[in-house]
Length: 147
Image (cartoon, rainbow, N blue to C red):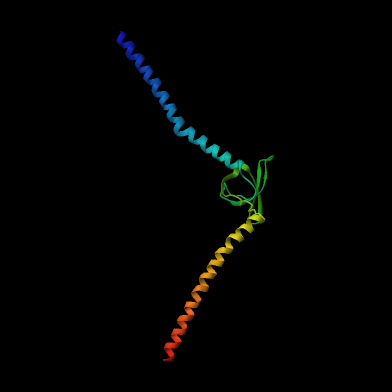
């Protein structure tokens, strides 16, 4: 009789353990990846700005012209046609808007020009040194032709 109780208790614990393992497995295989994907999409949506190239859930390609956070809408420029979509309609960003290129300061440009000048002078000196040797060879060739 005591052995029957031990067997019954062990089977109840094994059922509980299997249930816990099943729930943990379901969390790591289904719920956690979905949460990561949702977080990645939220981050992408928060970084949207004018000029980004995007694709909608309907596979329409366009460039963001305006974002209205109050109404949760976005206006896309699709080859001159402006369409308004919900922000949730953006599936992915294909290219970020180019960053503004700043011109180097005047002092940096002067330093670069000064650094480039000695290299140009050295190249000119090399060409000048090679020129007399070429003219000497040309004189020898003329002398050989005269004989």
